[in-house]
Image 1: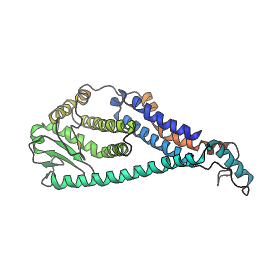
Image 2: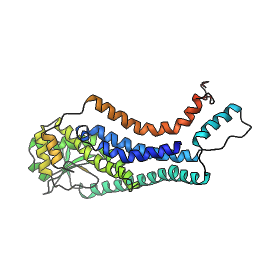
Image 3: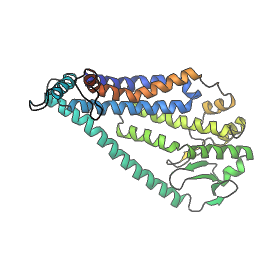
Image 4: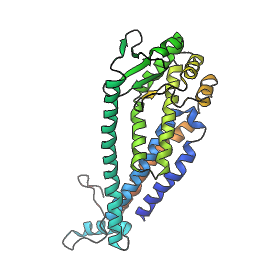
Length: 318
């Protein structure tokens, strides 16, 4: 049964994906790991919604007035989609195919409005007295606390405190700036925001909760790598240690966010990247996580078409 297959697919993704993606390889290929988390999350949602749609698919034969070939085509599709007890199936289909997208849309709107308000409050409170420093390409806030972060969005900016400028060497400061600019250029806030939205929409799903924490960590590794390509790794690691313990607004991405032994050690003793074959295999599995539910849901139509009972409109193929 296609519906059951889709639900099993969603459950397997939710259970197995975290165990596979959380391996040590993700630290060596953070960009691919972010893609894998996103694909697993999208696949789980897509499989659930498509399962609801298959519940709602008609399971009765078409009327006698239609052509025999269309009648045979509908019967072929109905034989795959059919399930006993139409009322429970319709209710389940409505819950999965209707309420899941509505819940996602509602949380997305609320999250967007809340984040927008938080950024406006940040600009009106913390950044109102900031001065633009052309030599750094950043905003400088007078403060005794050492901090560095970026504010994404329409008025994106890198923000440093005056204490950070005096505490960091020129090379360390260059590494911090490269780190924050990597966040902005890579639009890492979008990946983090979508993950947080899914976790808020469905707090009972461990996959989404784990994906949020992992994506937050992985985008920091991506920014570390970008900084290390411009400044010596030792200087970037030293800057992270100096900034450790800093506090930044929740809507910002901070250079020292989640700083710990892993990030510092990874910079000082970088591991070899994963090979081409494992990289291709991981990317293929991630793509399958999204395309799999679509292929499963489309299988009745494909089966009917290949059987010669359906004619694809406008193609003449049967």
